[in-house]
Amino acid sequence: MDSAGTSVLFIGGRSGVGKTTVALALHDLLVERGVRHAVVEGDALDLAYPEPWEHRLAERNLAAIWSNYRALGYRRLIYTNTVSVLETGVLSAAMGDAPAVVAVLLEADTTTANTRLAGRETGRQLEDHRLRSARAAERLAREAPDAVHRIRTTARSPEDVAAQILALLEWDQST
Image (tube, rainbow, N blue to C red; front, top):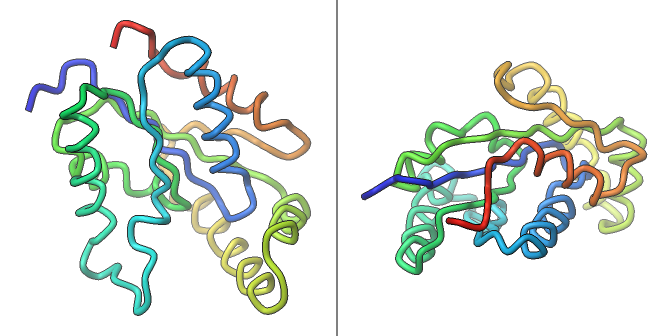
């Protein structure tokens, strides 16, 4: 498949850091500029019980979804998932067209992340998400490659963070 002009932005980070909200703010900025793109929420690609992770279902579903977007002429993808910045190789390979990759790790302090989680989770789910979020933050801080851009979201609006990410991209209206 011709990979000319194909790019992917991976947005990762702990739960409560603002990945989806920032991706939607970035989407709005790109729409304002007339930049053709797609947004995929990676968490939904393998959300099932029992968990199908060992079958690499997220990658298989990304391949299918991107193939559909690609057939319609899309060349830019925003992909959000907690650990996406650790899996840029397999995820970009799943796209099948050797995209240019930009990876961004969103970071927030524990208080901020927990407050955001409390706005969407309750009861036992809230505590489970807080624990998983803390573990993910530690893992991401330890394992994210140096090439990954790290952006703090604490005390910042999604639009401000999205504008900072947009400055990292070389996306324009021509593709």
